[in-house]
Image (cartoon, rainbow, N blue to C red; front, side, top):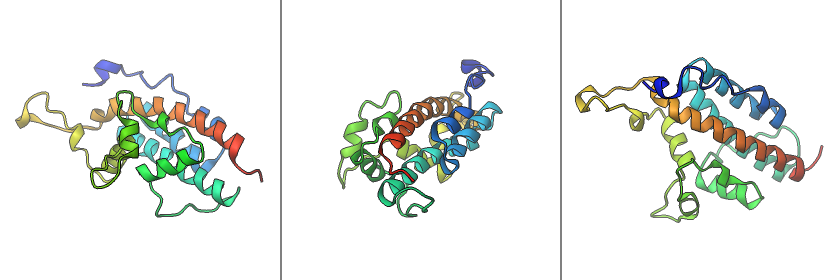
Length: 184
């Protein structure tokens, strides 16, 4: 199916060790490292979940360390990936626009939208759906409604997009952390 589009080696050129080099923080880089490893072996559900959790971890940990200083202080359990978390990160200078998906031209409008008509940016919406087990938007209906199906390969295009987005994001997070976090 999708591997016909991308080819079985689509993930071979990704180097998971780069995340270790960029982030140098085990509480963040392992999510990306193992996300890429999972993608390289065709485990798309764990790959996507791990990458999304890595993005959330970089935001939560960096915001916590910006506020509380260096060290291993557990971030608030109430601060999960959301538009508000992204706005908090932007307020301290993080480049959250790098988390926009390639065709998400309305990222900024969604990010700053207010209740009751608030719209979630795609990274938040996708994270909420997939991390709660909702795969309905990824069900393949190419063969007609009566032949709809879901397999992990249905997540392969999302996985490709998330890995590309994650490399750019982590590069930016690495630079931000080096220049803006209090030193130990």
